[in-house]
Length: 339
Ligand code: AKB
Image 1 (cartoon, rainbow, N blue to C red):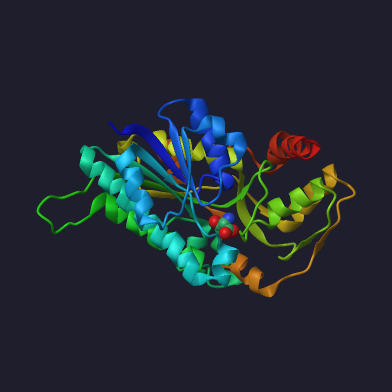
Image 2 (image 1 turned 60 degrees about the vertical axis):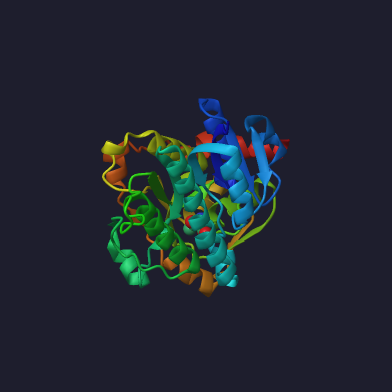
């Protein structure tokens, strides 16, 4: 008998930490994690099996297929936007090759059991390409279908993988005698910049916000690589985790789309600095624009219209900019660095 589980790839990353805790507190099937690195030891007691391995290793995935009965996959493993611009081929291999491997695993599981496998994919505001700073300024709150012309490898990978997920869900092998449509229930969220007080950000372009906060909490100077006036949408990690759980728990017939974007607040880099100074008056935060990285941030929208997510599955962030700092970031980050 194969063991019934849910599978989380890239579990050791920032989203993985929060998601594992939340899913294990919620109860339900045991969690198996897959990550290229050893799982953070503080999470060991919350998972059944922490497998160290590569999502590109098809033999390993075959072993997982044989050993487990997987009813849901949360496929979090990815190379983020900064690293992807330095190593686009690696990013493509991991982000696209890894995703199709996981979709294929989901399909094998679903066909062998004749039951739908749920698949969660974290997409990103990187799928958008605003074209120019002027467009970004004029666009206001954009819909999911606007400006889908990504300018980064990471954004191209994410947009393509959204389409792969929809293909596996709705049109897989559409010319073969037995249709496999409906065996994968693919759901994706395009996340804005995420702020975790618990884990240190690495490899993202939106990370200037959280990097500034983590540096200040450790009395380290920080040089921000975008202009003071640069705005992006953001949300706290607990809101992101709540969103994943809420979307995955929603009945299929309540969803009008497979891919939703969401945000909690839009903030300029200077607003982060001012907020941080109000808690850490000694913080040393300066701005030295890196034109290349700035151009990437300028290609992403300042705001998204998340009314479809609000209407379909009740998305509602708990934290705005003020409560993000007051109720989550500052208390958690003080605790983290006091330990
Ligand atoms: C990154 O900056 O790479 C990510 C993203 C835009 O999804 N936070």
